Length: 341
Ligand code: UFG
Image 1 (cartoon, protein in one colour):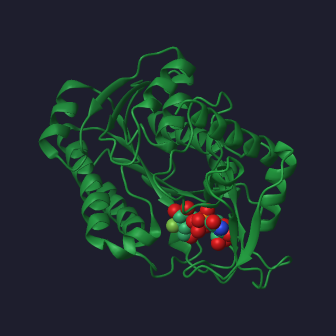
Image 2 (image 1 turned 30 degrees about the vertical axis):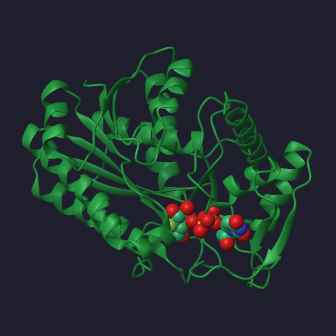
């Protein structure tokens, strides 16, 4: 059994945690990253946690010749593709940056997989493909809604590209994992999320507010039709999410996949409001957060959370970490980052 995996974008937030979990599960990992939205320090963190020096190649996944050299040199049979930009607002302002990077990197990797006869690929998709769903929780059969941002469009298009390539390529298997809201950090606090500039996402904004870097957290809307008026999301611990990639790869490597192209929701199945998350962070870390209610943020859906039955039953995976522990890890990581700056 080939237990080698190429992790494209392996120095990033989800990528680095996945590298750690793959290594723990006995996989040998080749990381490719160009640090366009990540930091070399994550490789130190991976080394400290696993005790193993990860194989690392600095390259842009859109650069076919550079990627060809990676395929020539290493005989991995599986690929996990994380190498993509992820800021929704930026994608609206700079659509071509997103279409070029997110699509070209994936197309390049799939072409090389076909050419070199590599068999299994996991794609990092997103709950954004469901848009403002009419029925909650969403299952994998919930219809996708037209994308509301170029970022979301690249996730939908990439799913379709993967599906089409799998059906057109003998021996190729693909799994798209639709992540809900990944949060937290490794319990060691040696790797975590490193947002550039002002964070867009809730938890990094919370931890930076707690650290005094941001003055005040704005809660975007308290007049939604939800129990406390704030939006509902499904916050999935980053280590749980990383483990889902390991079981997805194992499923394909061991030939247990039922279809050659499969899709799974990766969430907890539990809706949590913005107020609950803020209060949970305060309680878990015994601190007070400076926050205020502000206007709704354009483009936010009221509520989305996952039906995780398929992942539970088919992948044998479920979210295990308690929200409390996740929010504690997020704060430990923020303090570690500040201490090392
Ligand atoms: N929020 C605040 N204040 C902030 C930041 C966020 O109140 O400073 C709220 C948002 O309004 C939302 C919730 O916190 O209700 C979560 O917001 P995030 O930005 O953390 O996450 P989103 O649910 O907006 O984004 C996620 C993924 C994206 C994906 C998007 C589309 O991070 O990749 O869902 O649904 F595209």
